[in-house]
Every structure is written in structure tokens, then in C-alpha cells.
Amino acid sequence: MSRIDGRTMPAPTAPRAVGPARSRNATLIITAAGTFLALAAYTLPLTDLATLSSALAAGAAARTWILSSMSVGLTAAMLLAGTLADRYGRRRMFVLGAAVLLLGTVVDLAAGIVNVDLRSVTFIVGRVITGIGAAAVVAAALALLAEAFPRPAERATAGSTWAVALGAGIAAGPFGAALANRAGQWWLSYLGLAVLSAALLVVGGRGLAESRSADRRRLDLAGAVMFLLAAVTILIGLVDLRTSADRREPVIMIAVAVLLFVAFVMIEFRRRDPMLDPRYFRDRDFAAVQVAAFAVGLGSIGLMSVSGVFMIADFHLGVLATSIVFTCWSLASTVTAYFARRLPGWLRGRRQLGVALLIIAVGQLTLIRAESVAAMLPGFLIAGIAAGVVNSALGRETAGTAPEGRTGLGSGINNTARYLGSAIGVTLCASLLLHGGMDRRQLESGWTYAVALATALLAAGGVAVLILNRSSVRR
Image 1 (spheres, rainbow, N blue to C red):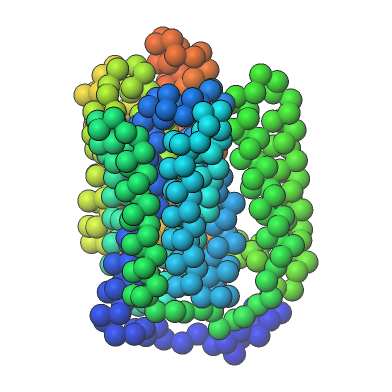
Image 2 (cartoon, helix red, strand yellow; image 1 turned 60 degrees about the vertical axis):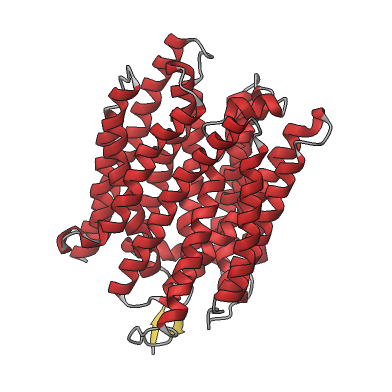
């Protein structure tokens, strides 16, 4: 037995395989499918905003919320979902997440038949619910993988497969929207998502083995509520900052959110069984993984989420053509994620994360003077290849650095960092891109500023991860 922060902890044991190979392979396939579906849902509206806006009679504020609403659900629910998965069962949380994902998609479908004045509001509510369901699915998926594949070599392979599913889901969303757009019915892609969510619900309930943490801590309701309030408040403030004529109210909301985050940290320090113990961040390896997740969301997902809007408005591309260009980035990420486990030993772990973040920054920097789609493709490919390396490493390192017996919480923390970063990144990049409206010269100027900011944030994140990794090695 050993003592950590004054608590008696069980001595570590050698990792062993969990369950028969058939059961573990089923876990890998089902959790990868859940991750694929969650990311496809996330990217569905990215290249089809104009069609959705017209069908839903969405104004400027509603259009902003269509892009941002699922991030609100993801960020607000991810940490709590990971905690509940550890306590009450990871399979149970995965299945519940699939059910909520289905519910949110059904609400989105209902937006097409309600009164025209309620369409955009109904759709946005559905996207928030979809984000909550996706949060539970993704948080439980990584925790289930960590339990099924405890050995480092196995975990590397499973993490690569998970990252492939993540990249494929990012690519599938825009293509699904483009196909529905060609058919002239935007809701077809959401109907497909509903059918797949129902299938995931059934398969997950039958094919996954249950697991939960042996450390049955009390549920930290005060911490959960405070974090939920802080996350929702800052995201609403950031979205309103893009759409409100009076900037004072959203600035006040952001300031209040910062105070709520401070209060959350203070509460967690005082709790005997905190939901998120701030002391975890004393571990430099753990901190490096969270910084990498936040940086890739902030600088990479944030910029790529608005790239479709830029290409459609500036280059006059159709939805399908934009989806194909977007796929160059996501497909490069998908392929690289699979082969990333073959990287040499000296470029594994947190060093892999830091170097890959810097390469994404280099790829994105080439987009700063985009004069045509052809000129953008090399940058998309470089950034996509490096993003695949990051995704593969995050899938592995999240499980490897999670607190003992709390893989659901570790997954929740890491994905919260990723989607909070992406929500902030989308807000910043969209604000810079659209600062002058849809005038072409202003769009190009805004794109330059957005690329410059996203690249700088990525580079800062990469340097921070490398510094933390070096400090950890020395220690």
C-alpha cells in the first residue's frame, strides 16, 4: 500500500487482459462506432449552414447558435458523464448516451415540422441535447477501451483505432449533409443519424461488458453543479459576444464564468471526494495531455470548423465540393491515426503530442494567404496528417495518465478540454472571419487574422507540452 495526498491507495498491479478476445474486439468495434457517430453529428452543419438557415428561418444569432450549440452540450456534460460512468457503469453510460443522442436528433427532425417561428429554437435545443448524448458516448467509450486493453502495446493499437473512428466521423458529417442537400431535403442526414443512434443503442446494450471503478467515491454534486454553471455561462457569453450589439452583457457573463471556475476549484480543494481533484495537475504527464487536448480544440478544430464557411463565401464552392476539400484534412487525419502507433520510440508519448501540434501549426500557417482551393490543399494535408498523430496519442495517453481506477473521469477531463477549446476556438475564429460581414475583401482579411491566431495558439500549446514533457523526464 502507498499514500498519496494523505490517502491510502492500493499498490499497483501488473496490467492484465480483461475478458476474452472476442469480447474485447466487440468493445473496440462498438466504442469506435460510437465515437464515429458522435463526431459525425458534431460536423453535420459545418458545410451546410446556408441551407439549414433558410429551412429553419434562422437569423444571424440563430446561425451562430446552430454552429455552437452542440459544443455547449459536449462541454457541459463531458466531465460529469465520465464521473458517472466510473461510479454507475461505463456500459450503462454509453447506452444512456446513445439514447440521449437519439432524442436530440429526433428533436432536430421535429424542427422541420413545427411552427416557422419555433424552427431554429427547436433545432438548437436538439443540438444541445445531441451534445449531451455525444459527451456520454465519447467519455464512456475511452473508459471502456482503457479497461479492455490495459497493456501499453494493446492500448496503442486500440487508441489508433479510436482515433481513426474520430477522423472518419469528422469527414462523414459534412458528406452526409452534402448528400441530403443534393436530394433537396436537409433532414435526411438527421434521419440517418437517428437510425444509426438507435442501432448503437441496441448494439451497445447487448455487446458491451459492464465495468465500473472499485473506488466508489461519493458523488460531488456541488462540484458538478458549479462546473456545469461555469461551462454553460462562458459558452453562452462567447457566443453572444459574436452576435450581440451591446458587448457589455456577454463580457459580464464571461467574467462571471471565470469567477464560477475559480469557485469550482476552491470547492474541489475542500471536498473529501472531489469530482475533479486539482492536485491531478501536479502530475506533469497528466497536465501535458490536457494542454494538448485544449490546444488542438482551440487552434485546429476551431479554425477548421469555420473553413467551410470561408470557402463557400469566398470561393463560391457548393456544399459537396466544400465537403470534399474538408475531407482532405479529415481523411489525412484518419489514415495517419492508424499508422501512428508505428512511430519510433523516441517520438512516443507526450513528445509526440508536442511535435505534432507544432506541425499542425506549420500546415495551418500556409493557409494564411489562401487565394484558391488548390493553394489550400497542401496546408490541409499537412495539418490533417499531424492531427491524426495527435488524436492517436490522445486516445492512448488519456487512458495511461488517468487517475487509478477512474478512466471515465480521465476521459471526461480530456474531452472537456478538447471541446471547451474548440468552442472557444470557433468563437474566436468566426468573430475574426466575419468581422466585416460577407464582403469578400473583409472575409479574406478576417481569414488571415483567424489563421494567424489559431496558428499562434497551436504553437504555444505545442511548446507548453514539450516543456512539461521535458520537466517530467528530468523529474
